[in-house]
Image (tube, rainbow, N blue to C red; front, side, top):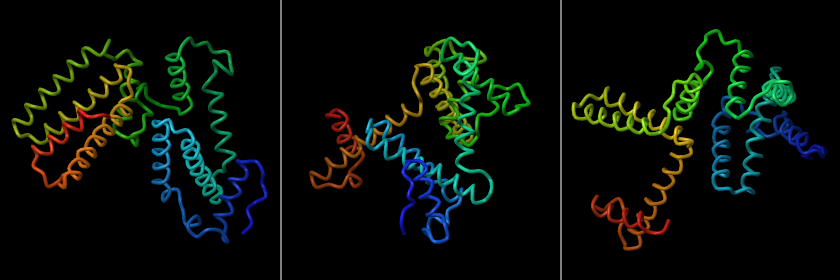
Length: 263
């Protein structure tokens, strides 16, 4: 099958996707729905983030293309169902950007990033017709828990309900740790779950007050753990052992060697 004779990059992509979805196109593409593509959208977003974290810009260009494909696919599926099309998607985000940047495209005056964010949220609330006065309204419950915690905390901070600096938050972390220890000692599983949740929420707050993104910080810690664990596995293999068959003490020794070795 000949590809559509379209030279501009974005129209060409749209034509290719439409051809893949056509009756004579690809069986897999024709079967896809918004729901079936949900996992693909998440996966492509995470792979894009990975390329950003690695500063792998050639790979980032590729991953952004994969992510764009998901937008075009969803738009094509919606167009076939008579709901909306890609032009409406692009027009909608363009109009939104203009509306929510009146300090650029209008006469509003804001002095810093904090002011821009407050203005954005105010405009967003008016547009969506929120009926309550809560600053927390509109924070999606579908967000990953860590990201939602950050957003909730930032919204609360807009009302002035915030710690002045990281020091009292660190004290709160110690308090939550002590309460968790008491719940563990008492063997109360419900209380343990609650206290772990409080500890995690407070840790997110500590990262925020330290000027860090909790999601990025945890991702780096996880990557560091994985790197050291794999180094310990390799060290065990090099001496003819299987890491999982070693005693905890032997595993710990290899772990410490990996921790103290080159990173």
